[in-house]
Length: 332
Image (cartoon, rainbow, N blue to C red; front, side):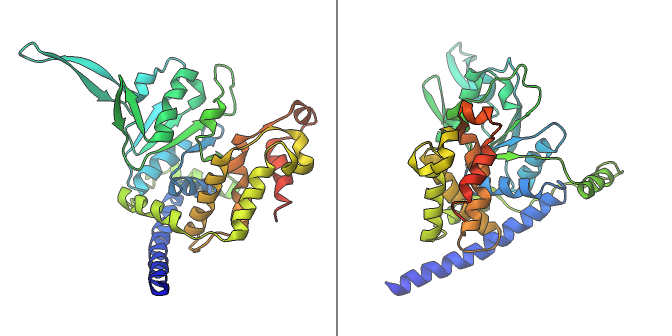
């Protein structure tokens, strides 16, 4: 028995070393095209390795679209993009059945698949579409299949949605419902690049030749990496840190002083997301097990879109990141 456990551990170690080097190569390849967004690139890779979806929030012109295109090339995924607008219909995303007539005059329905049938789907400015259209993605994101006219259609594997949202120009937008926000493993803020990164952007993107992304992985290699993430061991102290942090982000006795600021908090899906994310981050760094530092670093992007503040907290100028930082001090 001990020998078989040892063999299993050796297999995980060898697989982890191989996958870690592949992921680092992919990260470097993305970094050669996307400058000054290292944190964004890492958190997006963590999300994909965890098998989840990400919501990218940032002002226009920060390479959010380019990041998704680059990820598709680098990870060997079939990537498609949907521009969400107020008049977009669910069938524009999922596809629709059309009536065909054969030469013999026989009529039958044929399903024409929509852009959701991709391995990496960019939902650009997702909050500009109506709630009905937004909800068309709900089943796809959670269940990896869609239903049209009562027939089930499975989506490709892997399947990831990277949605973008503009924090400005809130006129003409529809806030994402809580149920849909909870489907996103992470909410990733895309900030302005620093001065050195912006200087590099100027030279690299306005010259005669532009650097193009190179493939580093295949879809099959990514699926194998996602399976490996779920096999990485997690220490008891890390599990307890995840439980303590997520439970303290809900109103109630576990939240202590911060409880009076929290209107509602994350459910068990947040704990699952954080558990997968810390494993994926460890794998990217070439470590065989996550640490409490991983929990603290990933707490904000995993939790903040799953929480809401009370009126009193907003009136006092509190923000969700402030409350999460307060909760983190109790862990480490």
